[in-house]
Length: 201
Image (cartoon, rainbow, N blue to C red; front, side, top):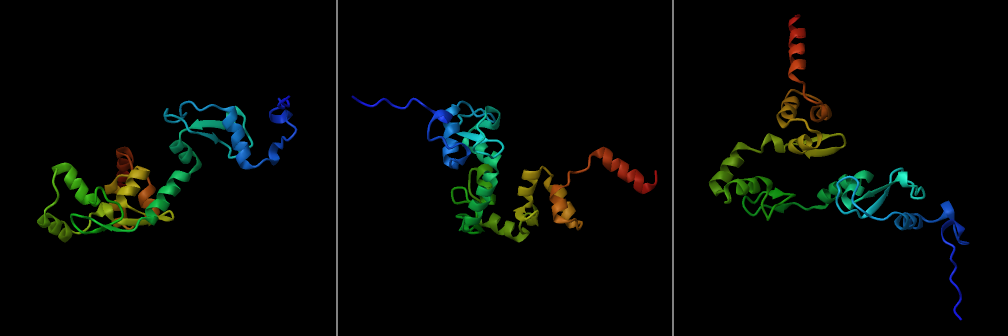
């Protein structure tokens, strides 16, 4: 006759370790306790249970967020670190159209060649490439080192919401790079007040 299984589960089980359990075991408790439904941030299919306070042993419902993988990485701050590491690990490649070294390519094309192809449905001619090289690199593609990392003017603008033209003008005026890429632009009312103050009105 087969032995009866021990019906005790959870804290009533004789081998329950409580807070002394491994982090993996604590995560397994959350996996068993909370079913995956829709992501609470983006409404996609959820894949993870996120511990809001970072304590994997705190498995009360108020501390668990049901998230998809991307939203979980954003909540933990891992997505930006992953992207930075991915960019740093990418060796420079040559554009198949203009032969310029670039870290990111779209079907072998650099950003400039890909934008031209997207708008005109054909690649840039050698004459256009030579003319663009004579004009020099666009100011929006200039790299700015601020707040511990290096990025182009366009990337700073996209991430912090400051207009590209404002960042370029500030840098040309001698602003500190960190302030140039992060300070929000003045509204029309603020500009008028500043003008009146300078004129003594």
